[in-house]
Image (cartoon, rainbow over all chains, first blue to last red; front, top):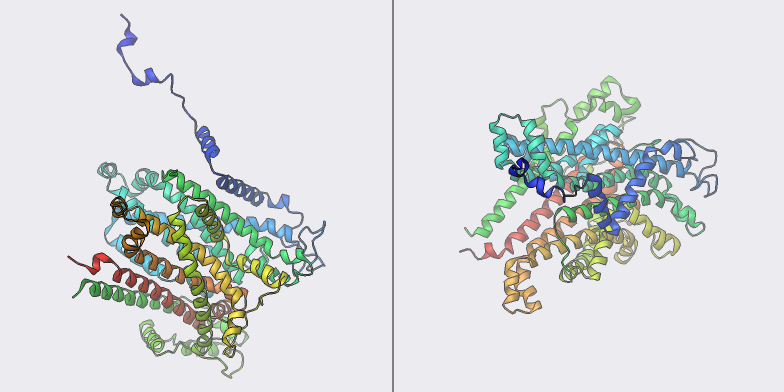
Length: 306
Length: 326
């Protein structure tokens, strides 16, 4: 009598044929299937991260290093010339990746922390907490966020900390709405009820039961929010009330060099200079949008109807 | 009462309530000012007595609710207070009423916004509806990728590309839109061409994508399929079956984007030095001229809320289910 035959296990029978894909395998397969636009987006985002991380090693000159020649033309010494007080534009573009993108990422992360915690809390506890939060968000969203940000900046003054906090709070309203909307459907599930009956606390239920189930829409939202925050901060800096000099920042760089555009007829390169930081902003938002578009398409399960 | 009228009245009441709360929020802006603020407006003239005088002038010695009532009754009568600038330094008061600052610029901004809307709305509706009808065709994909790219561009990027090409390299339009009250209409349109074109490019992308999504959503609903199966022709399906239900989403899309225009106008006005409310507001923010900031913010907020209200009302009055109650 063969003892092993008696204890039957399904895994034992099919296990031999099962090819377990590791996480990396799955990511590689997804990437192979990704459309050209998404791949382009990923490459661009990766390049920006590298530039931002290693800015001091890549940039030929310092962030606020001033040279005696203002508005120098493009040359081998100054790749994209110098700005109105003689700072190397190429170096400032590279440092700008660190400052502009870094501040935008910090703001988006803060907005998500606030919005997700409050949204989850509102969805789980309902009642008065939900009412208070939802009504205040309604009011905040009744004012266009750029206008509201301008009002708040005029009161508190334009420092980087104020900028991050103000934009994050204003933007967390959208995150709050989304989190609340998607998690309200999850909160009523039996397994959440079971966790509650087990006596788990609010934080545990948020983190272990609900969060994993609402993650895909939130990740896509993170990309879109990042674009929005990034463009808002760039716009504010361009208007002169965002990131303040001497910090190298793309939005303010466009503003500082804008007058050069008048000379495009005589020297096309000079005319293109103010567009360089603007292109840097546009390229990153396009890249993120392409990736998010692909991600949304993939997670929503919509297939192309041929 | 007819259900349509009741719903509209409810919506208007909600809009008024929102306006009230928004006015409260904008009013409390002055409440949140840091303590050293009178020092900031007075600059070098900041003595103890001057600071107390400023506090008294702003009414900071009175309780907030009384000040709010005073402020809001002023606003309703068209008095937005007095600008901070011109107040400091010598004892001579050269400051101007906020209303006088805003009024001429508001008409400029409204002109630019309506010029943009007249160009942008028809284009984006046509693009949106056609790309929804020919979904997944090459036409649809091209329009889609193009608009996704334009959406990602900051307004000033689009603006400077237009300046570079249409004003600097090939001087067709002026890059400065310095209009004033005496500018005649044809010249005004010519000078505002580039700002309006910038706003159009930005807004068409948004509006077209939203229209497309709304129409696709509608065409996927079972009753449209039913109409198709019953043998109705394509044009019949669209005009007779789809359109009555499409007004509401289309109106929402238009109003939402016109409201977006309110924000976009700020950046574009600064790029083209167009004398509008947005530029005034940005200047006031950098000099921390709170009464002017409050006045501009109030005007932007009112426009925004009104446009959304109008969209809701159009949605209500064109809703077949509400129009023909059981």
